Length: 291
Image (tube, rainbow, N blue to C red):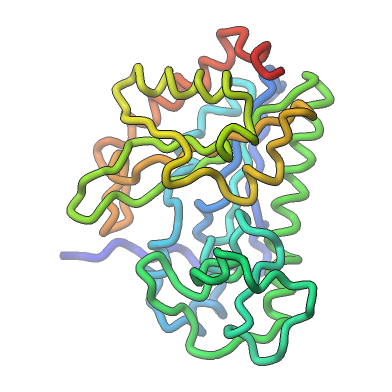
């Protein structure tokens, strides 16, 4: 069986994100995909003990494509181009594992978070299946470069989009777009998991709107279990300030071959339903629920 082509390697000029804006923003929604990037720096590929295919298992592959209709329907779409395993935009900027580095880390680094303990800090120690990424220990300067060149520009763009949307409409709903692995053997724990930090990051009415729509399309939807929302959801979701954040995790088995990292026959069907979800935001007075 032929293996799928590895992700293309990044050149030095590759921008850290792609921002696709509508001709005119007509809805108070921002879509963002922090984990679908697949431009791997050549130096990183050379230093990793894993081949490109195994590195790609940590991606939320093709997620930004599933929401591609957002700009056409009046909302901006932000997508990271750098891969999650290289720099994770859904972490604090300095969640670092001290065992990964040659020298002691600065005292202000968060080295004790549960994500760091699991090997999945801002700079991941392992990939999704638990295999170590690196052949050697890194220098702190390498982490600084990744945060400066990847994490910070992505979050600067995201914060700007949220601020612009709130200024224009008086409120903003951030949809943080993710995917999740299927259970071993192909069984799915759920088709969709909605994360609103247990009701603290998003208006319950907005979460319910999305949940009701997706359930009506035949998807099995759960809330906050096992994904309640990461850094993006918890950091930007501030309902009292009229900024709401909802993380949407889509089971990869719905739309891709997880072993080969390829789009599957269900891709178009899921994309069509997500386009309809985006359209829902244009057709109802749902924004009035963001209070």
